[in-house]
Amino acid sequence: MSGRRYDVVIHGAGMVGLTLAQALARSGLRIAVVDAKPINRWRGGEWALRVSAVTVVSERIFRSLGVWEAMSAARVSPLRAIQAWDGVARGSVLFDSAAIGESHLGHIVENSLIQTVLYDALLKHDNVTPIIPGAVTAFEANAENIEITLEDGRRIEAALLVGADGAGSSVRRLCGIDVATGDYEQVGLVATIRTEQRHGEVGRQRFLPGGPLAFLPLNDGRCSIVWSQPPAEGERRLALSEEAFCRELTEASDHMLGRVLGCGQRAAFPLRKLHAARYTAERVALIGDAAHVIHPLAGQGANLGFADAAVLAEEILRAHERERDMGGQGTLRRFERRRRAENQLMQSAMDGFHWLFRSESPWISLPRSLGLNLTDRLPPAKAFFMQRAMGFGGDLPRLAR
Image 1 (cartoon, rainbow, N blue to C red):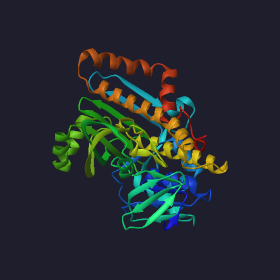
Image 2: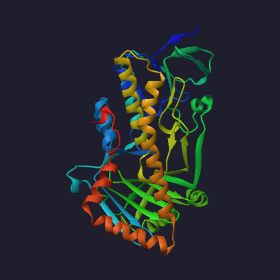
Image 3: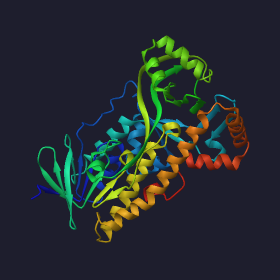
């Protein structure tokens, strides 16, 4: 027999899993959140290395969940515009939110801040049970429920198990769901830097043959960087002195904010892609990186996960309101139908940009540069790309409308 009955068990207490939990918490459903790792708590002070470019649509989701005010009161950085350059053929484009009557395209927010605010909000609900540390090691689904075994031997049951446990998802593996994977043969080098010139709340990206270099504006005047590059180069640059690294970064950025004056801690992580063959199994759903991982060049990965969480919550609550099975195939099919095609489209687009901007061939670089310059002169095209960058398009969840 199971030790405790829940409506939904979420395996993974990262940003996406906690977004789903918060979206369900106010419904009165009994929720368990399981994770082997403690919450990576935000403590202020020095900027965290891992940040996300939170789109306007994701901001709306967080506002609807009642957590955005706490994030913005702590530390978020507006992203008013994005400027992109071709590092080979010199084409460029500026996407300015003011041109479409908006105040911003998004915000730069530390991952640990998002996680902390969501978790603290969850603790206010007595229908949510954190099982941290804890891990799902086995489960068995039937027509009525899914029985879940935890690593300490406890058994719990639910109508639905959600895998929000990242790219190495154990829930996905236990379901036997295949994945299509690929290695971009790059690492993303991240750091917080000081520059000679002010960023003006503009994100800047220079496309280089080795991979894109992004400067993301922070609200204290510094920038967070994500520099995609071959692994050997990443390893070499991690070992450089601060002075030597800043010199190389200044050159790679083509002085887009003058000289790079200082750099904090550096780290690098491998860049790979992943897409699950399906997002659901019997009484199981996958969201976030457990279902899909894309190249970070447009900063959309976390936002796709937030949308997954909002759509899955909407379908669960729809079934609950209509007294239907929250973990049944009808609920899960609607979730997968609403999210899989959109995520596949974004992954394909990122793969296309990745291929397009890595080439140094003049047969590709010259038309590519002309395309950037032409887009910069076509307001309708710029408006379309800005709407997509803000998260609009596709089947928006109710929380984002």
